[in-house]
Length: 417
Image 1 (cartoon, helix red, strand yellow):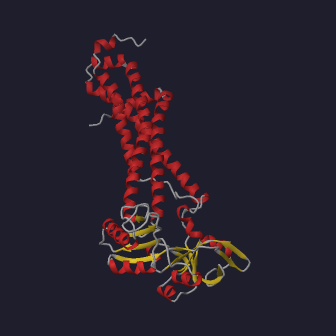
Image 2 (cartoon, helix red, strand yellow):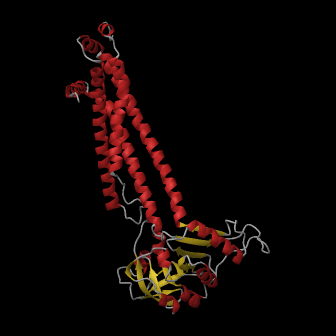
Image 3 (spheres, helix red, strand yellow):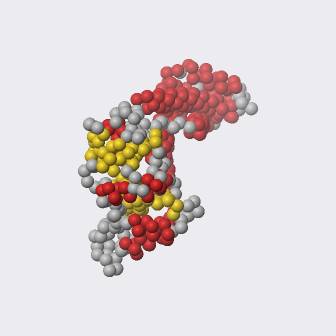
């Protein structure tokens, strides 16, 4: 049963030494404020990074051809690894696990884009209709490519928001024709804006792969292929199989990492998950170190309190007070200081995070800042508060045990001077 008289007495003792207890509690409040803030910042940073990877299908794999650094049988070192449309068709037939597959070709040359008297220089990519299922790109207005756009080599384009703002200003872009390196293309889609991590998409223009080949005589060779796998496929096992297949077909050593780089979404996510776990552990250690300094100061203050009240404790024990009641008396004061300080630190943390989130919302465009908000969650808040209460018990236990063990005669003869 709780001894409410002990809590009331502890509150009165705290009131008698306001300045001392405020300074002591500040260390705890500051520690939990920092702990909550940095953990919330860490959550927000992780969410911002993960938003970037949401631009890829969860079962996607990207193949990047490079330059061989090892000599394969019958081949020479330094060979550039390039794909052809025939390789894509063969991959589709050879591996039934593949659901979608697309080349990604970057236009080589002077890519001047103009509309009436406005112009700019932008990156042009040639892709097919599958590309937008591999890299989850969405349009704000209009539509994406369909299979007929690619098969019929239609001169249509999907543009990013930055292209639209320069070339068209406030004019409607959908349905208009833009001149891309000397050829007119009809704008059929406007990409959605994103965060700072995928802003390169907003300065891009996508055209059908076959239209790029026919119009600009480019795309017979390319070094990027994206694909998605069905849900029952193990991406890591597939990655090994496809690298072995391509090494034999394109003539490079399958152990040569410079010849062919593979981006495996699920494996990358696993790696980032481990990275952020390490970051969170580090942030917890930093916060706990700050909180520990406050706990130590409370323990020291409790030792001072016991020293000041030694004679009082001796009188209490002389008239029959149990050691447990003395123990609880000192612990109560320690717990109250840490609990109140913890609440103050927690509320301050919530307030600070709320202010930062408002500032991010009103003064930071999501396209210029990859953290959309500091994510404060209830498990962190509850866990921090429980941690503070436990800290109060730990901080006060040694002084409380010393007080409980004081012998009445020694206490009555004690001279604090």
